[in-house]
Length: 124
Image (tube, helix red, strand yellow):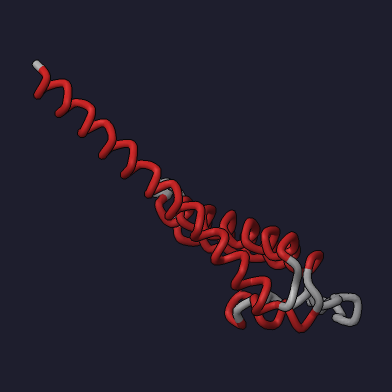
């Protein structure tokens, strides 16, 4: 009986220890990312945390979109463009132009809409 009790306590300690280690590992990843953004973009930790949240939300939304089997490829493409635009808009409100150039990949830079008032309509 004493052996069984000792075994249960030992297993409990091992499980509690392994779960707390995972929690620490998960907590340090965002902190490392925040520190990276802070140094790389030369911003304070508060802004770096906002950048990290924007990036994480974007990545999460992209993963969900890719996993969606109901949408057509064209619908997915349009949603991706929308997600990129939203992420870029949020980053533009937070960072200056130089910082934006560093963090927004060239493949995700969507040019602003061109004015159409100079285009003449063709009459048949």
